[in-house]
Length: 370
Image 1 (cartoon, rainbow, N blue to C red):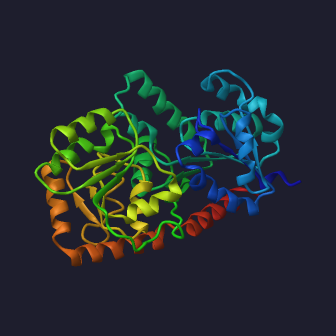
Image 2: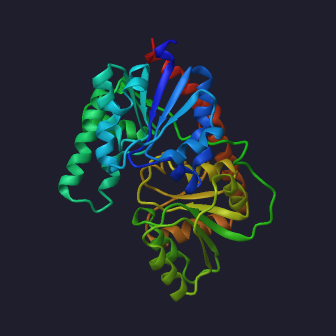
Image 3: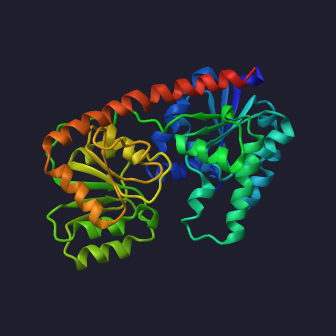
């Protein structure tokens, strides 16, 4: 068997296929690999789940093999020994790929041991996001060093948006030719416009954390008649529910929903809103755009490189008054809503469909696998 046509995907440290399924991400995460597997003799999924991960084999292409966690060691310690535990499989591969930066050290160790090509894929910049997580100095320094070393030794780097390219070049002095942009993909056969009655006005999908700026969104809805559905869980759930109740807001909280059920939910709303302080390449925004929804997003990194104001969405600043004005601008102008809804769908078809993402990855593999 030709080892160059075998690949290993290293899961994010601590993440299992069971977790993908639990949070409703399973279908979205495995779909591109089921297509990519047609061009590989073998793709290994190295996960941090136990033997129960093997039960998901039935959802995977016959060329994909699951390699679950073989020890009860804490995942961070296990991640250091993993390249030796699966040395037979790893030594037979031509390329290693990370799913996120967290856990990239495992793939890096494997590269050093077996001399294979390494693709470091990042949906967001770990060091950049950690600034908003309240982490201490030394924890942020460790993240910085992991990114720096991983980017330096990577043969190719996959990011989801142009701001990530600029960040990596500026902070780590990495050659731009090493970096490839492959946006988060959207399956437009699932995320599409469905003619359903609009039951509510606004919808947000995402984690209920400070990054998402949901406090400002609720503030913007005070003294308005706009209804809002918030889909997601997080540390601010109780606080947000209390704020909505105290101010008499029409806010419906939904814990979670499987990814394939989200299109129906989105299509029952008039407008999607994402007021975050920062994002990577937000899948929830892209999914709403693919459903041909009018979208409102904050004029912040990760969002303002997707939304072109007045063309495929509406941009607003981060404060409650700006959010309120943006919503009013859209709600009061049906022709504008129709225009940006069509522009949103066009953006997805031009840049983010699954077929394009897989094509770009296949080109990348053909370039580095000899």
